[in-house]
Amino acid sequence: MAISASDVKRLREETDAPMMECKVALEEAGGDFEKAKAILREKGQSAAAKRSGRSTSEGVAKFVVSADGKTAVGVVLESETDFVSNNEGFRKLVDTLANGLLNAPADAVNGDVNSVSIDGKTVAELVTEGVALFRENIQLTQAVKLESDGTIGAYNHHNGKFASAAVIGGDASNASELATEVATQAAISDTVEYLTRAEVPQDVIASEIEAETKRAINDGKPAEMAAKIAEGRVNKEFFQNKVLLERPFWKDESKSTAQFLKEMAQGTAEVTGFKRLTVGG
Image 1 (cartoon, rainbow, N blue to C red):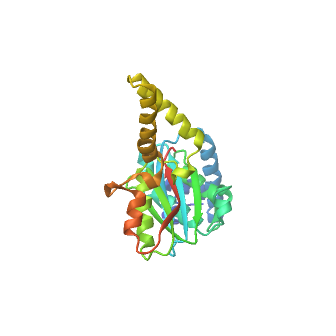
Image 2: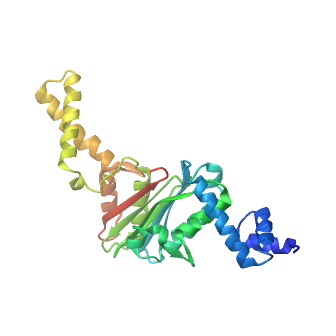
Image 3: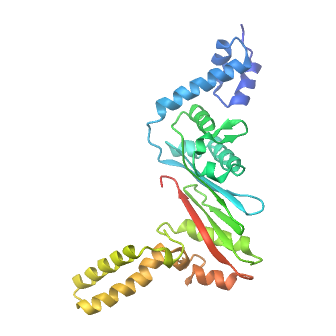
């Protein structure tokens, strides 16, 4: 049977598949739209399987926060090229995944996220459709859901390469602003691994002190002096690099992030957690 241009356009609008593939699918389905959609899905799954081994080094990292600031979801959707990751349709898929997962149980998002259903389709199906649409291997490489009785804020970098969220506890009236500021600090602090100094394992600290002691001795310092130099370097440089609350605050590097929080909080405020996501991370 003859397939009209309007039918092809309709299928294209409903599936986002290329026009020619829509036409072929309708022809194979004898004009039946549901059969045509099934054909497109099968072809999309086949294309996804063929491309699954390709490297994904580009993509978008993004956090979204619920209206009440109690829940946040972060995702990293990766592609083969920045041509695709900068595509409006790809960014829309990122939004669909992140916002859709806001309503899913945290253990599902943080576990087998591919089986989570969003508007009648699983995450795996949505990603597979993306592979068929963009003609590249696309992978949801990270997904995380945060829930808190406090306030969550997020920061998404303009290039989409990294994003973060921070959780603020306490009664500060400006908790939302503080959470966003701390999330920004976390996002731009790519060496940070811990929230507080107390979280750093003692064996890690001991290893750093040993390395810095050897460095000072190699610089010609006596052993006793080298030990003091090493302790000073670890207390300042290492902890500033690895601990979020000890990082120089991005708006005023004369203050630590903890000092900023104490001075700016309109009430009590404490950072109780953070998460940083990166493309390729």
